[in-house]
Length: 151
Image (cartoon, rainbow, N blue to C red; front, side, top):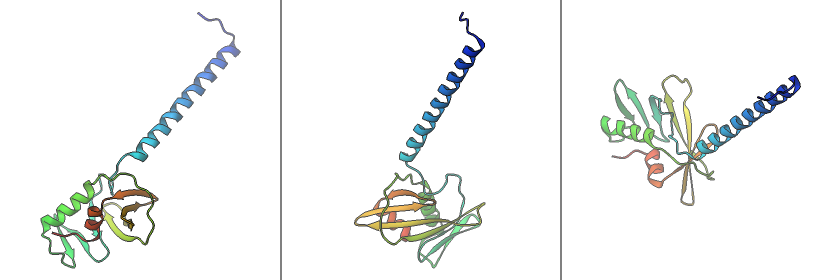
């Protein structure tokens, strides 16, 4: 057994606490780096969409079904499939894309303000900007689907 003075034990405790703090800090940095490179959805997983508004159309929840305005020529099941697909996408992190955004507004249950998503395209690159400043890469098909859902 080691025989240390009171001052010696205090130094051992201080060094031990510093080591633990350093390890926790490194773990937090590694977790942040990992989450920055992980694909993520457009909306939180638990979000219940009430209304999804595009540039010239709107899909809104009516009871258990959906309706569009103006009429997009899609059945309730097709509208539900679009909403479900959009919520199910896991999009990789993207780089900022220049250009003028096309804005989507998504009203979610439990929030008074809509979630605003900016869609960008420039030279064959497509991206979505989520608040506050999260860029996600989109494919051309995903970009077109968000601009105007089709049958």
